[in-house]
Length: 179
Image (cartoon, rainbow, N blue to C red):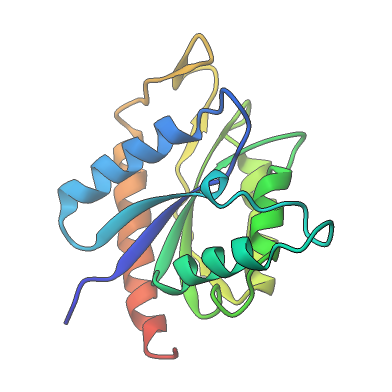
């Protein structure tokens, strides 16, 4: 059986964002496992305008085409005002069927580990028929980022990242049979 394709979705588009550092770390850990094809998918690359403001057929088609190639996801989510970023919500809304019957893990960060953003994302994923997994690496802006800008995760997070990836792969493989 061929390896599953897992997209590591960067959930922010703002200048100075930290999600690329976190995403690269997750990808490095994931690639070392050798059990799936992992790739970073940066929503900023798709330049999705706010839904409904302009014709975004080209951007939406590219976004949906990319998502359709993936069997599962790991969302890198930062907490903005107790929730996910507007750019991530917008990107989630630009697709429907491309999300369905796939699994997702969440790696969050913020002042309380991004827990509130992760909980909001779980509700949205449920509506999109995405099965989110239980293990959730939660990173602290105070202890896992030097000066709030350089990602230096504590070693203890490796256990949770690997546990989350185990669950994402198990669920993604099972859900693939439904698609």
